[in-house]
Image (cartoon, rainbow, N blue to C red; front, side):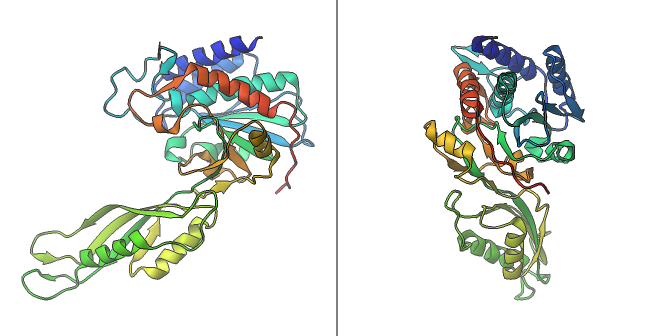
Length: 359
């Protein structure tokens, strides 16, 4: 099959997926359609809930393994769409539709690259996976699929990066912080105002800098995003809660940041989860080195992906632009899909991968 035909198949498959609403935790019908396509192409697959695993032919446990991953779920369409979000439409080389950029383009491009690379034969194993619930970091997504995977030595995640390699990614931790005060009458000088205490803490968080700075990702970022306190106008509040969005770097684990903030704040500090940590891959890895040889520029990404759930080296590399994700009238360029397929194949065909230690 010529590369042109691979592009045509990628585009048609993406149109099919756009037409099927697949918001997080509601991906079953889209996964059905993907599995139908795989079966039609003679590609064997394993389905775990709404996740899919495809192994390349001639899999051998004695060889290193490369994972190609993308997600099938989308966010809900935002207000402001001027086109039907679930109707794929091509206009002047742009393919519009919810999930086209994030990350349908990566999904279909990686799948066609998987087929091409597998047909040519490689010195490493190829595994192609599609995960659900990525947009909500849900337990029914990559985490559910992970125990079904063999040992993985390195992964490429097809998030939109304009086909530049994101060799590090910030983690995410959401903190719910409860500040206690003492109730009193607002007309008299009594009580301890929990809102004032919270505001002092938020002011400290706004300027506090963790000392270790990542050369790729910069500083750990902490942002107060929600605050609630008080019951009525004439009572000094004895309780105030606020939420902090924390974006960690490869210099700190989420637990380390949680411990540091807990020791500084006179409050109850609870993390909703610490599992979404920062991820990175060495600039000396053969995939990164070949990216640079091909003229690509490694960078650090502030946005979260399934990389945060991968206990092995990984990088993000995919068609489309991150700024289009989660936006009205989302689109991907047909040319971006073509370039992605070609780039993946050029990057990975004949590559020698090092094996990493088994757990």
